[in-house]
Image 1: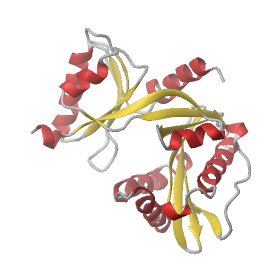
Image 2: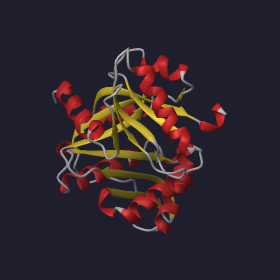
Image 3: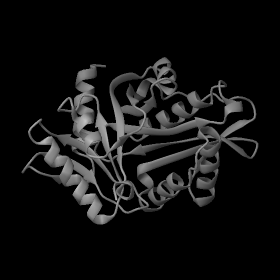
Image 4: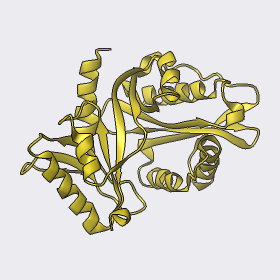
Length: 260
């Protein structure tokens, strides 16, 4: 892959062209997504300069604060200006851990999944399946997956063609889960989740979940797979599978309540 070309295509299709509200150009452009307190609220893309950045940041804070909504500024390492992270922190944003933006061509990964004995993959289509996904999430990450479960269920209900969810079951117990999201009109399918319960790691389940989602994406005509990978854990696995890094993304979170 030509990584520079793929990065530009990713920015064009998945960020500048993402569903949401394009704001500007008085001080600078952003694309932002506004939902409700249960959904995802975020600035997805920005076109800023050293002269316009602070005013645009302040405007997004005012927008979401007026609605009483916490939100995320999804920063990428190739975004400008270079000191945008410093400006976001100065405005009250708190960064999470950075993640590598990894991309691979779908065709090379669309192979039959290979699972350990006693494990099977089940497609999720309803609330009962989402409960299994949340249980797998809780086991894998040690955090409460209730909110993300509700968000995925909402998407399955409202736009089922844009998401595919799969759970790995050992007997009847969920041991891993993952999803792929499909944005119409783009060439990228996004991979999310993929966490595996600690006692089941190292047995090829993650690789099988990637292969399953790659086959689904290929069948729907998507040319690339994209995943945000934790730098020290998921990134090496994806690299071994053939993914390449095109950027680093860091969520900068703004809490209305914390800012008073």
